[in-house]
Amino acid sequence: MINKKEEKADSMEITSFSPEQTRLIGECMARHVYSGLTILLYGDLGAGKTVLVKGLGDGLGARGVRSPSFTLINEYEGRLPLAHVDLYRLERGDEYELGLCEYADDGFVLVIEWPDRLAEQPTKDLWKLYFCRDSETVRRISFKAEGEKAVKTMELLLKDIGEIGQ
Ligand SMILES: Nc1ncnc2c1ncn2[C@@H]1O[C@H](COP(=O)(O)OP(=O)(O)O)[C@@H](O)[C@H]1O
Ligand SMILES: [Mg+2]
Image (cartoon, rainbow, N blue to C red; front, side, top):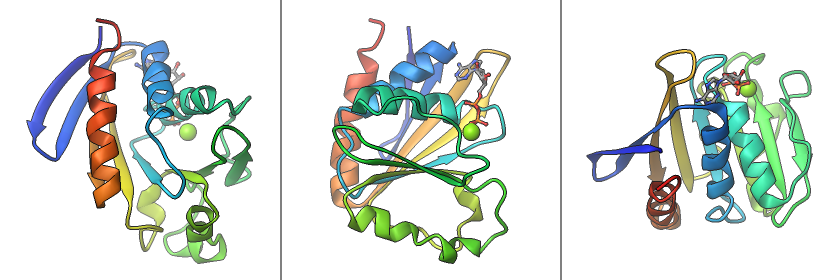
């Protein structure tokens, strides 16, 4: 059972009680993402960001998603192309070398861990997820969206997530 708590109209909090549930949330996201969407994942080490991206990869048919902590960026082929970025090792501002906005222009779904390292958001159409570790197995994830299409698709996503486990 996934707990869903409405906070404000533009933000929703979901509680996950296991890695499997977080992975399912990611898989559910795959049904609502679109080319050019950027997903920013905020939260400490071990919060579950990569677990969620593995689920997203499963849902997109992109096999073997692994943390790009050392490579910075991994690309996958699936129903939509997926670029998974981890900026943990970067200093703020270094992303200009990475050309992240080009992924969105090229039709990728772009997912970024540690987006706090970015000086600027790569696109205007964004989903933002904030992970909070409550205990060994409990994670609270807040969902926000910016940009018309991102907001609309997130509304559908959140309805869909609410139905997981019911
Ligand atoms: N509810 C949960 N959701 C996601 N991960 C969880 C959960 N409960 C425990 N975990 C564990 O927390 C760790 C999360 O790791 P990871 O996804 O790599 O974190 P991050 O990418 O945020 O640094 C994994 O070892 C996972 O098994
Ligand atoms: Mg990670």
